Amino acid sequence: MTDWSRRRFLQTGAALGIAGTLPQTTTEVSAASPTLEKFVQPLPIPSVREPDGQRDGADAYEIAVTEFTQQLHPDLPETTVWGFDGSYPGPTIEADAGSPVHVRFDNSGLPSEHLFSVDDRLGGTTAENHPGYDGPVPEVRTVTHFHGLELDPANDGQSDMWTSPGGVEGPRFDSAWQELPMEQGRTTSTYHDHTLGITRLNAYAGLLGLYSITTDAERELGLPSGDYDIPLLLQDKEFNDDGSLHYPEEFVSAFLGDTAVVNGAVWPYVEVEPRRYRFRILNGANHRSFDLQLESESGSGVPTMYQFAPGHGFLESVVPIGPNGDLDSLLLTPFERGELIVDFSDHAGETLTLANGADMGPELTDLVEFRVSDPSTPPEDASADPTSLSLPTPASYDESDARVTREMTLGTEVRNGLITHTLNGHVFGDEDAPVYPQLGSTEIWELQNESGGRHPIHLHLVTFRVIGRGPDGTQPPDPNELGPKDTVRVDPGERVRILMTFEGYTGQFPWHCHMLEHEDNKMMIPFVVENPIADYANEENVVDATGLTDAVGDWRNETLETEVLLEVIDQWRSGDEVA
Image (cartoon, rainbow, N blue to C red):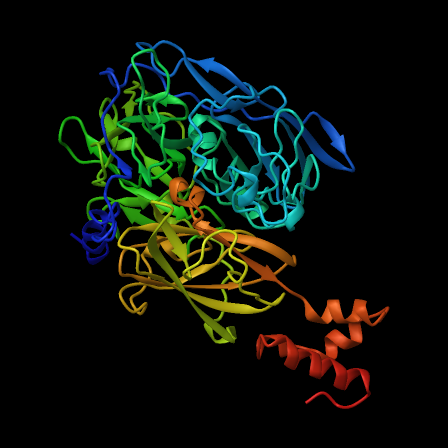
């Protein structure tokens, strides 16, 4: 076992850990589903959504959010789910880098009563949980976030920007249309519900879909494409005998299902040719981590999984995963992604299984089966050999550019009788919770996990680089973390150091745990990106602030004390030389 894999194996068992002094009754790990035969239905591939037209020069999509029934397994009655465009998961939205997209999600077709029980002890479920808002908080409400997109706050789909089927608007609702510039590097990610207090319920009901941004650099790599480019959205669920989804009536801090659902199908199989395939794997589970490896039905060798991207951009180099690889397995916490190439050429006629080795709650080992055909003539394959793939150099930040290092703690308390996870000792709604990075500044955040359990931490607006791990943050990242990410695993007792530059937009953005039960119970606080130069120029009616910006230069990277920066600005305005 490699050093990387040994470390992760030891940490996997702690993924459900909760501090020993806290009650253990808020974790549901029961196995409730009826027995279902595995691998009796083909893997569905989400359809690619065509735009409905143009809006201000951008491709425009009007997508209905509705309740309907869908067959998730041949031996189950049809299951009532929620979805986008009448499908679960929703259709895939594809865009080219730099080609803007506008999306309007219309939830007027949803019922007024939720599919699951809403626990009003959680923040966001009543008006008192929304500071400065005294309007109604309907039981059913939604807002959609494009995970990993660089957006201004108004279009970011933040948790208090919801609307209800009856037209009630949340306290920070801005517009029915979300305008997405798509001005960033390539990515494969998800759009999903992000509603305060009920994200876990809405997402579990089915409100997830995939989107991608493609660049010319990606096209030039010669990756498998078309029918040989397969998304795998991994989830775990539980079912009642009547086919309905099971979810606890009262809040639990960790929900783990006993049934694998991939692309909306229970334990599917996929028929593949003996050639190379691209797999875009996304963990869309509420709480469960997946530790993925291929297994052979015959016990013979398995193909190597070659990871070339962590969701955004590209890795520094291709990482082989499997026997004799740099990693034994691919570990993905909720809403992390991994993009792989697998070559089935040497496995014609064999059956392989994508298996999960993470030890969490009800055992869930098998996920999807691959049946490799055995044609008399090998198929043509013009795609690039992953062992010789030359990846574009990922954008990286120089650690010496960071002028601010923040220790950001992950903790656990009991609040209102519930296990509640905190960030810097705060929860959503605390007035003194935000930190204030400056526009254009580079920072290091040291995520110190004191909670006793694993947390995948996600930041809106930015992508970051993982620069250190381990008890003191000095161990190197895993080799498949050496590229741009927006969500990072932080294990118990670990300090994970991340480096990012706050570019593009000012305003309020959340950072939070992406275990949806934790997020719903307020493990989400804001950071506020400020631009004192522009703000000062506006206040003083400075028509052209270019000279001011040039004079100040990189001062904002020297300190984040706004008062000092304003002194520098005053020097410039008085004609004095800037110190």
